[in-house]
Length: 144
Figure 1: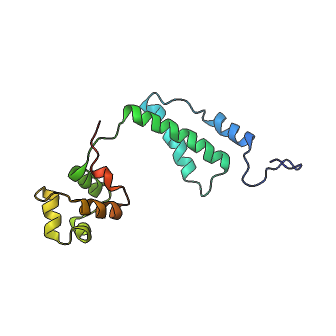
Figure 2: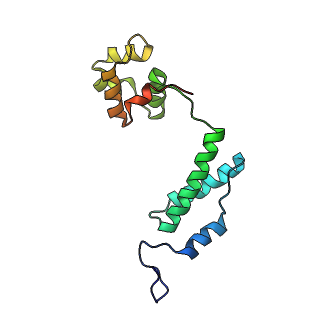
Figure 3: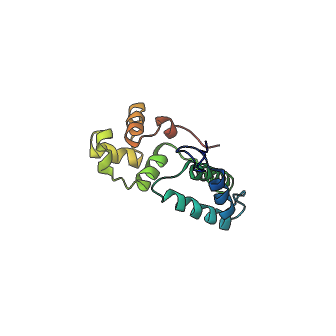
């Protein structure tokens, strides 16, 4: 709500601030890699701020939706599950075999699982889900 001083109260949206954001970089559907990079740069500049106003957060959400739509169309996530997913997550998170010992009890078991000699059990999947903070179901889901 706007006070008589012309200032907005904390937590309210300022139409002029939002319009300034729109004028500086009007959101449009992303149709090329260049559009994608330009949109990502604006997102990065917003994310680097210590705190966002409600208008900046709304604008960030709009740009994020455009990025998501583009990625869904042109850069679909690969459909992997089970052992392949575990290996990909290990690589992404820089995990070593020794990091998985709490899940599989021994280094030998970890090695056997990663080499495919030992199947992932339901208990393993539950422990992996908890350890990686993801749903164990992602290890079971198959691609389209």
